[in-house]
Structure formats: structure tokens, C-alpha cells
Image 1: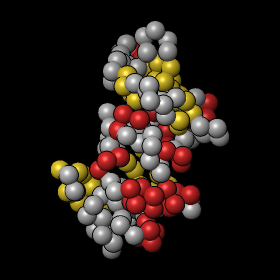
Image 2: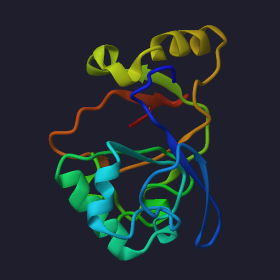
Image 3: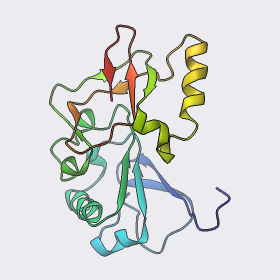
Length: 173
């Protein structure tokens, strides 16, 4: 980013208990993927969890992360084979602060999906540029996504920004 007020720190899990730090250094210890102390979460405005299983973190870190989110911290979880229920997140402290509900039957959807942006998604800043992406994929006759992680549905009060629709017309958040 060219914004001098935005600093990006990225951690990539290379093996159990080992994370590679990329980007901006931070003043707290994140060598285990998340801070070990609740007060250290104040270093961050937003935490984005990519395709990573809950088992990559310690239970107390997930508890502190939940408390941080409940206190106003921003959390985004990206889909993938190790997110939501398939990644073991359903029975963690984080489950109740995610905008989706998880069940033991939540599948991995491994088929092309067309993106269908909701009315709320068309005006939401995080979706900027998605309509062009969506239109390009539709014109090429292909799914814009290679798949997704199924969920039991949105949590009450959640704002759904987009769906992935399969060739049978079934939609997934």
C-alpha cells in the first residue's frame, strides 16, 4: 500500500510452532503466530487469518483473540481447506465471534463457483473491484472461485456480502 499509515505484517506458518515474519516488524512477540499476552493484541487493528487450522495456535491465544475482537478488534477469516469447521474452528473460542455458524457436516466445495454479490456487497468498501472480477468470470463462462468452505449459514446480525453459486444453482456464503 502507498498509505504511510498502513503497516502490514505477515506471518506464514512454515512448520509446527514456526512462523516466518514478512513485512513490518512489530514491537510484540508474535513468533507463535499470535500474541501470547492479551495486551499485545492492541498492537493490531485488523488480524486476517488465511487458510490455517485452529491447531496452529494455543487455546489461550484464541481466547485472547476472541476478547480482542469483542473489544472492537477487526478479524477476517479467509476460506480454504483449513478454515471454519474443516480447520477445527467450530469448537474454539473464536467460533462465536465469526459471522458464520459451523456444523460438523460443513463440506469443502471443490467446484467452480460464480460470485454473486449481494446488494450490501455492492456498496461495501471491502468488495471494491469485485463486480469487475465477477463480470470478467461470467463473460469467460467460468467460475470466479475454484470452490469454498461450506458453513451452516450466517449468524444472526451478519451481513452477507457475496455468495458462490454452483452449476446446479446452489449458493454458498
